[in-house]
Length: 128
Length: 149
Image (cartoon, rainbow over all chains, first blue to last red; front, top):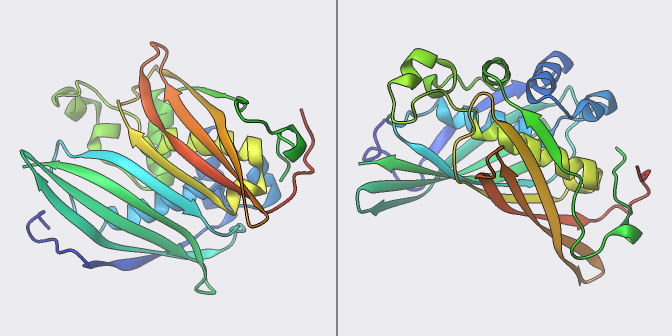
């Protein structure tokens, strides 16, 4: 889906992830830290952020040369290992600025009780 | 989840416990596997060599994980449940870079009985170039009883 085809307010289809111990162990090993959280049975919040961003990236692709320029996250609730999260998002803003397009995406993650555990915003710079 | 800082110890101007990580292509590949982000700019060395970046780069979210690790170390559950992070990606981190993530307490505010700690954060490579910069706010809803190390 190209930049022109994306509309402000457009929502991305939700994607579900089961944050099992094996999934989080793999994440903790990859980031080389946060072993304490694994031991305590808590999902590192940036793992949820990573899955939320991945969910969006499955919905559309950006051209080569695009840059992830900025990122915001708010961690709203502790997420125990074993939680199933559903990640979604929408296009919050599209800006055409000179030779660049800016795309602002809102993201969120809900637990299986439909409680929001994470929200965030990503800004992607796309060459025109 | 214990944290290294105690509420009574927190002062404006204090530094947060820094996190130092050496990045290799192996770590980047591992992160791709764990996160599901297989963008070739991260994992395909031949492809990345042909781009203006001239080689693979680490996922920005990997470096952000180091920031979150530092904040978790400092603030424990207060970060995990009530933390806010806002950053800009300034430059790519590459294989063989050593990334030092550091932070400082800029201010401490009390609003309606709740304490908010405002921090500035930065991740730099071994040349001192800023890779990520930004800020974080921690809501101290849980009194800190963690062990100070």
